[in-house]
Image (cartoon, rainbow over the protein chains, first blue to last red):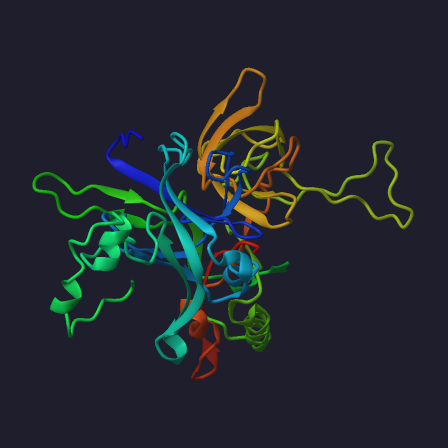
Length: 188
Length: 232
């Protein structure tokens, strides 16, 4: 990706691997992408203001859990149909977000750079504002795919953990006597 | 598809524009800010301001149109009112009714109506192209700035405006235009310079101004804003 020129034109793409697949992009009208390693079939991405917000995309390091919410506009059946895929298939479906640089003629200046992958938890709708100015959206809650929602299995200096590391090591056996009154934090 | 009666209402202000989604990267330490666009080509918006709707027939028509728009639920074909099209003799004109080549008519003596300008696409042209080759069988030379409409398999009319037009050795025109094509068009698709129009819907921000407010003695100055719409 080169980002040449003074006027940056980019488009964001979201590929949701549910049944059927959901393909949307930030621009207007349809956009056809060829098959690549993420979207192995390729297809038509739908546009026109459906993508409302793409939060900061975070990649968790050292086990911090990152949750993201991709927001889609949902004032009518068009957007609702997009996430009206089988709900069972939405749960744990893979979501990929990619960036495409466009040239001055709005043509792709290269392949899509799929920057971020996550796992979808499921959609939820939200409504903000009153009567005439109400804003209705669909939030797709996603977890960045690198972590799970639990601690590393051996993370404590307790007798149990230490004997799992080394079966005959009694080094931590008396730790239980120290920590009366402490509570292990969730998630464990 | 419904057709908006632009000509019957004679708008006093009429603005077609291609709207986009500009973004900026903020103010840098030095130099101008870096800006960009997320819309991938933009979409059409048009505002009609009608200076005076006074005759009762016009008021009834306006109310009927407003009712049929269903507050934006119904797509409508909005014609472009323009005189800059490649008319064969340089000015808008009606095409005389013609007969079959042997001079005969239909059995009830009806003759054939056709467009004054006859143009078509040469070669299949793909979704999101911004250039095409156009053959003009009947019509004047292109000069840039003309509107045209393409209707593809979905049946939705799509408006485009020519940026540059270069005549090629074989007499066809190599044109560039905006916005990018909305669908695939096959070889021979009519390039409609005669009645440029676009599939649009009522802009939800402008719903209240569509319903005519009557002023004394008995007239109204409604305005209506449409934006391009797409089938789901």
